Image (cartoon, rainbow, N blue to C red; front, side, top):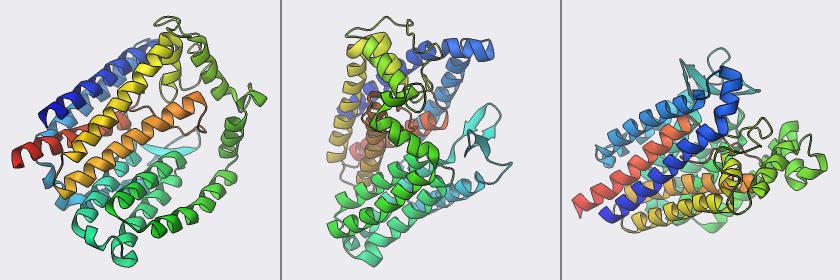
Length: 364
């Protein structure tokens, strides 16, 4: 499995390097305007990257199976933090959302820890009780209830995008583990009206749906972000306008260095650059599938599937939002978008994947 580990490391390293370059390009004007330092976002991103790489190396240094006995403790800590962040004056509120703890220069988002904790818990549960997965009460209901509690706390922040992502990953794991299709269909059918209600309840969510259906109908209002994203991608042509020469990053495209960084890549590096990023993610998923197929230990098997599902789904949604195929979700592009907690925990997830591969080699 050494070849698989090397390929995975190379792919992730390439994505990280692209992210470093594009974060500076996309954010330098904004940073200079708001902080009088064009390197402001880049320096913070590099700090988070160092922290993430250190955490990744630390996770790789242990046997991933040592984490399994602590799966419920890790989940409990995540639930506690998700409750704590909702308390005024403890959780930091920004633009109507309360999702972060402010720790000096670092903003910690507990939902990023919760995503990984839910995957670890579900992998542990399925590795121990897969033979009961077709039994609704003993095998199917417990992880669904855990997922429901975490999703409820996450949607209260509010963060519907992360909530849906976690639900899809857990249901995907249950499907692969052999859960009854009608159990999964029943849960999905019950969730759809709830999601519709949550969207209809909040005007900003309805605005995102309307903008997704026809962003050009109100290109200066609710459709502004999506239309600017499409303008950026369209103006890049095949080979782009040149690195650093984006016009949309000049305060036209909101979240240019975070959720919509692919649009800046498409503008500056063209269709070729955007496709290169997408190909890297496809190769990442393909390499992850190879790693999964080579994993013979149950906990590592389900853990790897959950991580690949999480990162692959997040990349797919981010790309889809940028091109207008999905409504705006607020999910960063893994390893490329600017971000603290997301980048750190994504690198921890990669450390776990590499650990699974390494341990399999040692065991078998």
